[in-house]
Image 1 (cartoon, rainbow over the protein chains, first blue to last red):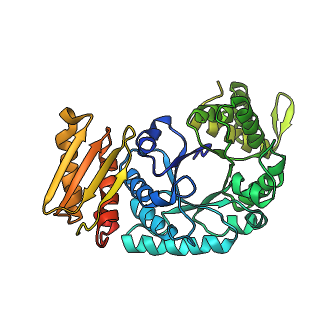
Image 2: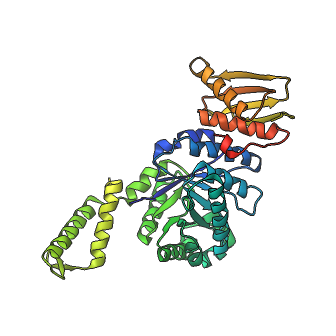
Image 3: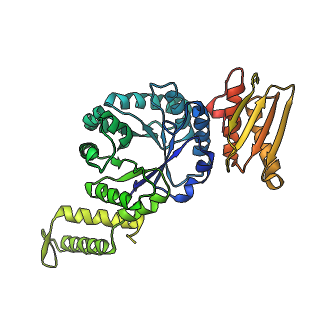
Length: 290
Length: 96
């Protein structure tokens, strides 16, 4: 089971972070060539990220690169560099429609063929950052078989909505819309960055909300948040114990040819069994909550 | 690749390096490093190999290293050459 709980953002221009961030073991690392990089350092960030991807430093951690929009002077050069460097996932910013994904996919395939990389091996992620993107989330999420997920990005979105970050009310519709679109397309959904790195309690409150909503994970801007996030996403020992008993009861019922599964006198239906299997896979992949 | 203007790349932060390049009659590399005794020869070798693959045969290259990994050294040198060259003609496949 591929866990995508934590996606650690780092500026592609920061040599120190690129040289060390793998030690924090996020599920995914996202090298940013867009908003975190000044205009005069775009070339340097692209080159550093190219070499970081090829260095082997991030073996075992999913690599993602947020390129500049293809409509900008930098986007196509970013794409050439990172696809050739072997990035696992290209993150497209400011995705407003399925056509944005189609255009990206066309260019990725062209580069894959040109450099001898297997066609289809570069996966995609679309970041939704506007009202249009949220409204079109369903068609965006199903726009390409390469998509592994869609992500809500809050800073641009709240500006587009003429509001500001607050207690989460301002993101309520967008979170639900993006999440439902992802689930319809059977891909992952990623929540927004929590900007106050010194507010652990506020961070954990937001993590609890998005975990219960059903998000796979969250974008992060500080490595300190990784362990907090992973722990919050881990099932408890009690949940794992209950899941084991549910799965055992289901297997026993199947062995005995029984149509009805019972545990401690209560009927267990198929969705509960499937959820129990998911809990066990999560525990196997990420341990239990501390 | 012909160097036709002065350029700068990188920073003086830890794990990075700053590199300056300028037109020069031949290739001269001036290296300062916090880890000169242990890695000076390795850093210079990486720098020469990177410049050689870019076809840079005449330039003054001043490197101030703060403990950068080889991949950072290559990236910073390629960036500074890109900024200083008359024309950037390198293919991505030649930059590894």
